[in-house]
Image (cartoon, rainbow, N blue to C red; front, side, top):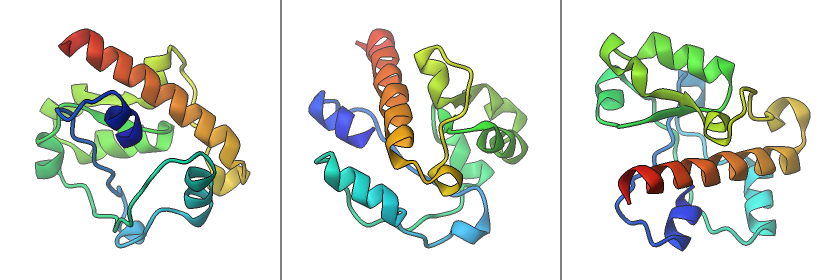
Length: 131
């Protein structure tokens, strides 16, 4: 998403990635994801996963999940007033399915395609709503 925003010249939109469980705290981008990003020529920087909290979730306009489990975890985590901010990434592409999870499938190509489809559609929605 950050790459798409950069290509579109959109500096007005902030993107964060957070963990929903403590087992991911401090983790960097998965090795397979880094390899796929390099293959596609998409720049990235090292990250260290941090745990999303209800207070931090309240700061954002949108909370995007990749699959049903993320959505379920987000709904339990955030305050009731923030639940309307929760959306599935592929929802923006008009699809009601989960992003293919390479942790289980090993298929980083399918995941990449899903994420690009969702992020491109989200960017189009944001552009349509905010100019």
